[in-house]
Length: 218
Image (tube, helix red, strand yellow):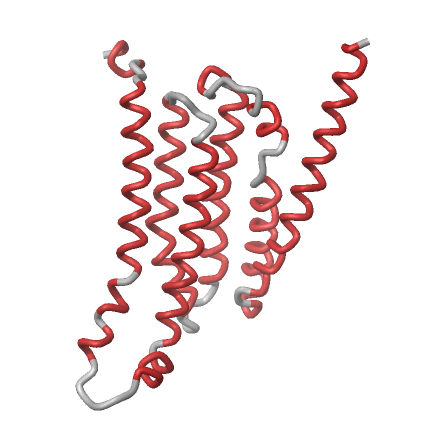
């Protein structure tokens, strides 16, 4: 039993990635189902404009969920491009990440309902857990180098790995949403700062790495 559980093959890694892609694809497809029911519910003459106007919350929810899931999958794809195999920890981290993916359409729908209090905090919490699982995958790869694809781009990628700042900002936004529910989705504007802060931290890591290599070269 122990030998079976410790067995890690290239085929197993491909199946893990394929399963993850399939879950994301299904989650994206399911997003449109509520919209597909809208035309069937129309029983009198109307216009396309009126349909869009009447169901704007559902349409906005669809696009928001689609874009968010797409961005999360893109980050996962970029991360997995640096891995060549997996272990139990990476396997379990995928479970957490996929759980957030399938939960996002639900929490986005709650966010659109003005009668559900603190739905914004729940939404931000799910996003934070999703980002944290991706950050943890990268951090685990940095700790277990045998899981990574060998190459000259590994060290620069590890120095420039992003997501930590986004996670911290999401936690701050979630705390604000819990304390002040009336703020709605406005705390998410903090994420605008993530790109600039991540680039600044990446430059500092490169500078520190350059200084560390300098004395060795001498």
